[in-house]
Length: 375
Image (cartoon, rainbow, N blue to C red):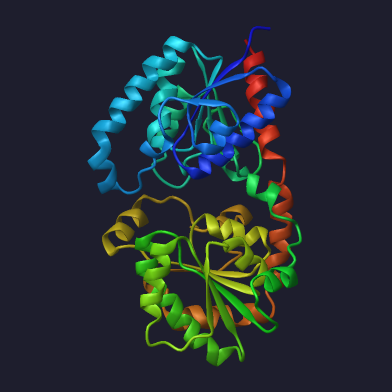
């Protein structure tokens, strides 16, 4: 067999992690495989020849994208031309659907096999995108089982490969060891996780701190830990803490340590809820958006739940307090009983963890190679 050439494009750090794991698994099966495309430092360390720095793709938010739109479109056009000329055996778009789905469509039309790794939230909103995916994608690799069911119903070839986080997070995290590592002693401990982006922390930070103050009345001796995504978030939280008397430890990063150490979590809706589930920590999920954004999304979103634990359980396993329902009083009242005993949530968390723990990188590599053998 001729040397295998695999093209990959990742647009952000989470994609770089997934891509490097997949590349490692492919190298075990094809030691002389060649990798081209766009990726970050982890993918480059596995041997990717990256055509330009991944940072050029990592833009968040509509306004930021508009400022960079011309550059992004130009880069995408050049990338498509380069890849059609290179004729890789397969192209794998990792997440970043607004950038990669279009590349997949053009390459598939040029006769190159295409794979998309990590489903966009088409099952929740903008369901019409599934038509573009069906047209541009030979295979969809999903991290979650309910996503695979959705694609099967829509006639898109799909494989559920499991979630890499479920492979790396232990089935039974050591709470004592985590507390020792963070210098935290005994007694009830609640993690506050208002999100990693400035806007999220702006909308939820003070609310979570208010809820923590109320929780002190309901749970004697409770203490708090809050992991800050970066120095800017830390400064933002410190400003909100001014004038408050809270037994709170701020951490730089270390969100996994915080989850391992705590008894319960007050958490913003997002990927972190999946991490809390995998650490088997009972949680209350809260979210607030700008009123107009919320009004629009409420009409677009087809899913009955917003948090991953509830989507995975297909029922309301964890309380979701959204928009006007997310008051400090409601959050504290809902969280208080979970600090003492959250076993109703956590027993199901364990089942879900085992379902997601499938050795994702190797599953993905096998699925990609099976696709190539179909010729």
